Length: 302
Length: 289
Image (cartoon, rainbow over all chains, first blue to last red):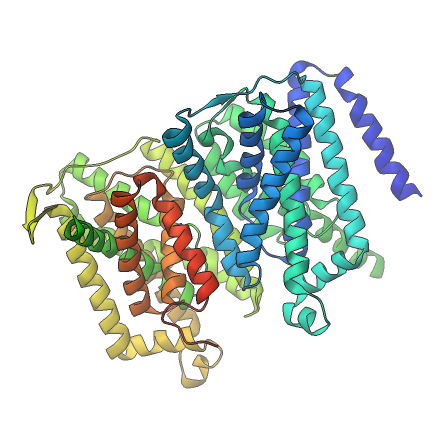
């Protein structure tokens, strides 16, 4: 019971927080909620299966761009639905062609995907529609964006928890441990991986769609910024990608640290990011949460 | 028209082939999936341009030095960064995930260093840009020089791997890293050599690309992506395969750029990759397992 009540109480607390903070504080809250959502959604697929997806921003950017294209033509809920469908279609195409093969093909494909989508959209806009760069005029306040993102983040974590208890979660964990064992125990490898990947991609796309009004002006080079993919991976890794709360735990402090770094060291910021990332891979490869669990267990045994 | 595409495509393909050769060595022998590979090539390109503009040293003269520096950098990278990962994985499948993550971090680190050192602008130099007529097609001399470098370096590598004892031990590690120690091969040393040699080839390719192409500090991902696709097409660790696939990609890209649209070259690369994945995931020249 407490495991359900505590997160719900925290959610209520987070939902009333905008009343207490300044405009700048609200911006930080939106950013933190966005990265908690992105990192949790990323871990939903990559954390369990160890299939490292480097394509977060391909989906995030697609979501944002879908809103930019459709925001004047359709009502808001329909726009979100279209964005989600676009993300799902893209994930299906990528998943169907690569997830049946060994993991490295998937990584390579995801590695270049954002750049591919960016170039394709740029080409299409320049040659067919003739409008590179679009404006988003939606009647959404910053608070509205925050609440939507909070809801999406909460839904992502709830969904991860629910999947983790079910057959799909079990299947994904076995796949992550040993794919051959998984195949022999009758798990449909391709279907399990595809289901988790598409779910994760839809959430990433929705996250991009929800934050897009914050950009106001949208251009492929703005919304397909590779730093988003990079931050998502490092946040999930730091917290512990195969734990339910790991990605959220990694996302909040790292997001604040990155905000501070980019404000105070704008020139050396990318270098610091790279160093931090390498540091995480070397020092806490499993993430903080599993490392802490191990430490506690050792204490208990001693 | 067709001859132009053919010749320009072959010249471009030469640079791609060279780029992919280094990557196939790093992945095939050292078993490191290096996502920062394109950044290493870009760093060499920037250094070659800086030497040319700052000190007046032409790229052709600085090339051996740049390649040697690439070897040294690769050696250091392997010792400092990859070796601990290899030791930690204990020969298991974890190395692949770890190396992907570590080099993904390295990618941003190197890109950050390049951005701070050289800025975000597109860079190019005019060096040996006199046209030379080949079969009636005017080709810039710098492209021909780059092509010559590729043929020389690629040919030398193929020969060395095929005919020397050193090449034999490299191939042995690529084929069976578990069994290589049984015949007295120091796997760690060979892996380090393979990785360093790969970095040297990346530097060579980068410096030769700087002679004729415009590039920017954020373009590394595209280089890596193209090299990866070529490696997969040729079959991992397959040097002649990588050479052939590199030429094929250069031809296809030039064809797409001239016949359809230059903005779609990366899409062509991906389409090719998708085709290989669906049709022959073991590589065009690999054996079916």
